[in-house]
Amino acid sequence: MIATDALRKIIRANRNRLEIDMAELLMEIMTVQDVPEMSFCINDIAAILEYNRVKADRSQIRRVVQECWKLAPANNSLSYTTYQIGISTSGTNYVEARKVGRFYTVTRQMLETL
Image 1 (cartoon, rainbow, N blue to C red):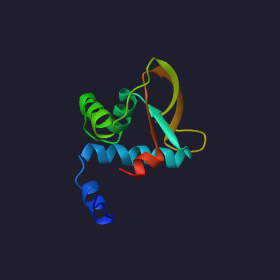
Image 2: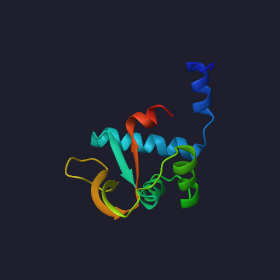
Image 3: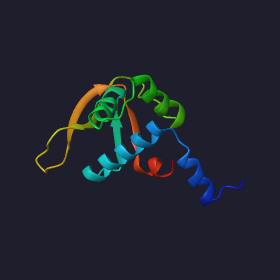
């Protein structure tokens, strides 16, 4: 009803630290790889967070993804493209990988509106 830019800024600043780190990490990957959306399993994002020295267990990550971001996993185990830590031919720290699992998909637009 009274949503203003200042209110959105306060709400954004009071988010869980893990949620902020995850959003920044996913935005960085999407920017570097120049993709509008990214798919990942909980284990994928946990490995990248661990590499970046962010301490979080899988239940905390799942809580952020499902409760805070309101994302639902794919209905079946399907093939998806994700990014993991490595050195690619273009010199970036993220390498594209094809995996199978129940994944979540997040878009750049969704992360920008958090």
